[in-house]
Image (cartoon, chains in turn red, blue):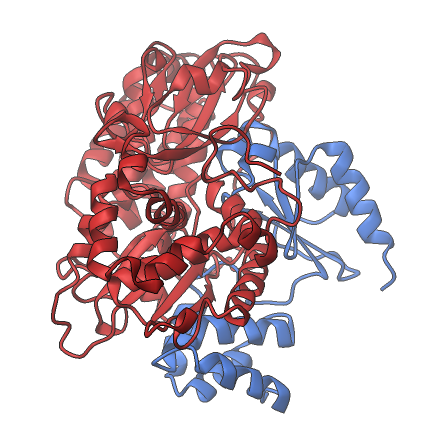
Length: 466
Length: 159
């Protein structure tokens, strides 16, 4: 079967037996590795190629991958270098890495081996979220196949390069997607982010130089080495936003799903294009779009006009590409209700390490919930802004708090009328609650039989009066 | 409550993957949960013993992560995602349906020990919202009719 026109990362999805190494090899898989280890490229040349490709990390921050690799010290003072694949995909609205791992595990494994070669790394770990039980089993099977074919282990393909990959399952904690939280978790601790510097490239897991890369990023490496940096850099909107990109489309569209397109796809094309979302369900109109997962500021319907979905296109709109999770909300959605839902997520997932975040996230949730329930006061809107501004911008160890306030501040800024209507009339401005799926309360803790979760040890305090 | 010998052998193989014993803590807690269904204080102490870790460290880690069960759960752990995309798709109705159908609140277990229903945060099933998991398996997309059939089927499974 030939790949669907133009697809790179998803080319093999849907192919019969796409997970098996036989089909991967038949499709030209591991050719890049064979070429590199056969003397085609030095480790430095691989890093240089990734730098030239312009590849920026697909996990959320968009940091240039080759530059990150370059931070590993030349002299590691006898310490090993570790490569960690971040497969903790937990940002609400994101589901691309799950697809990549479940459908084409060898694409990831080849990218990891190539990256490890560039980093002179002997051992790597795939940190995969606990819920991806199927994905972990598929990866373990694929890794076993790779060992059997001589692609992993000692002296890969007869070369002097050796590498081992281990699958490490998480156990339910959003914060472990933050790279130093992931490192702490891999060391067998609570996944609480570290103070930086030192950065992981110098002092990471087990005190050794460590590179953490997202699943999609590592899959891109496979294709960059196979087809060259100029090819990769030639895809995308401009030289700062290169390569193929996976977009996770969900919410009130006709055809949600993972879509691949050149970096910089227009938002409206993704929502309405024939090959993409195919428009709004039930002929409704767009009210708001979250462009980069729960942590990204919401955009209004007007803002999605001329909105390239890439790092700089969304930064220009004071939001972010993040994990490229595009969540579409129609005209019947109550924005306050959506904000309550997002705030509940962050309140539950705060790791509890820094006071502004640990205390602030439940406060935001409670104030929002009381506005949504029709018990809010006009001053509550100012209170939300005041709490938010005391939580982020360097008040905490990691950027979780910055993420938590983004939906709150953007929704207030852009949909203030809905907040005011709730406060003044005690109900939604938008259509029937049922249309927004807002039935039932959200009082549950969300913990899996773990109500006494050590993270949220303190019940949220009374909200200070405004 | 010691680990059975064959489980200890499995733990030895897990330890080979890491340069420290502590790094094996999450995988060994998974093994403990598979062995006993949930992780009691005694089970946590056994994990601490085999990994040579302070029991307080194990307890701290155990309570940080949501997927370790700190008390027994039903044979079918129904996990309903209520994060934003599933919320927009009506996940709240599925929660209400489970409560009514099973007669238990969230995090409670039915008297016959078959079901525990919990709310979970985003499980990366957003394009097939609302998405739920029963134990390790995804069931998506869900709607009240599918959920009714699923619960019927699970309720009729031989004990």
